[in-house]
Image (cartoon, rainbow, N blue to C red):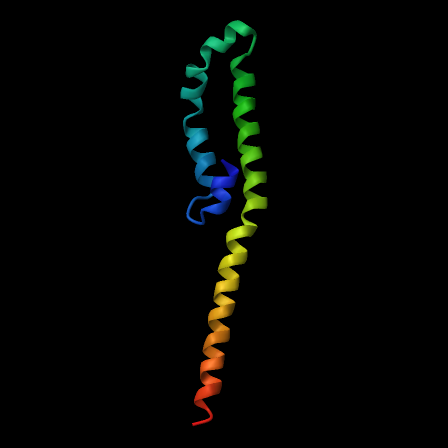
Length: 91
């Protein structure tokens, strides 16, 4: 999930955290059968929190990839415009 939020510039880890936190009550109810294995509802909430933290860490590392390419494309555009104005000054 962190790879997805890191590579897509419009999707941020805060959106995923908000969705998971707002649905945490439903997730705990859905995971109620795990209580028979000794997992309490508090532990399930800790698992959700751990998932959010791992998504945010993964997002941090994978966010470098699109940022680099966006920066490089903007830099190349500036270089092209600069070269265009250099050629125009000779006329």
